Length: 234
Image (tube, rainbow, N blue to C red; front, side):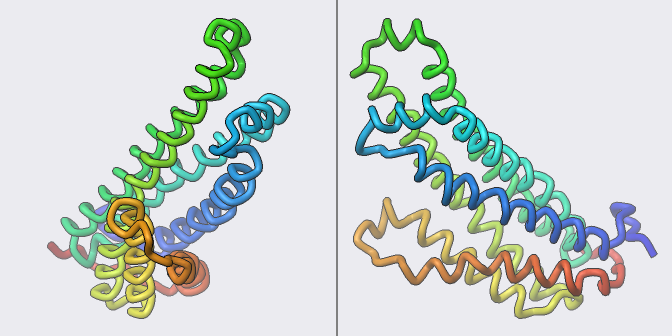
């Protein structure tokens, strides 16, 4: 049976969503946890420039890993809308829009890394600008990327909490998945607001909450195919 509102069976939407989360879970840490710390040292601009110039392939890989991650968020916002539209179509759409907003903010932030690549690939600019000005501009680009990206996380965290609510109300997805997603969203929100509201907060405990979406991914991949199609509600 096929869901009449979107012509895609819910079990397929669940499976595809699980696959996309898996791809994001593999690609995002590669960029965020491995490549970014390896290449970028905000305290030492000359070293950062040296790292990028001598490892341009890694830097380009980092940019494309972020790009694939944020593109995945756009696709996932659509799939999760389909999956949860039968619960409440309008709220499911709003939930998807929050993740889409995060992805667009993150993609805009990513342009700062593209700018860094262009600056360091243009030898004439490096000579004309001078080392001090180049250092300042490069670090400013990285700081802008991080601050904009963290701002976008606020929208992502709201998405997760709304998603958790819809999951709890669905009746065809394990309610504990909804609780886990709400906790995960709260963790992301706390982490995003920490620099602005809680600069001295010891947030090491928040790391545990970030595994919430991975738990949801496993449920979608293992149990999602059992979901039966529902009629839409408003």
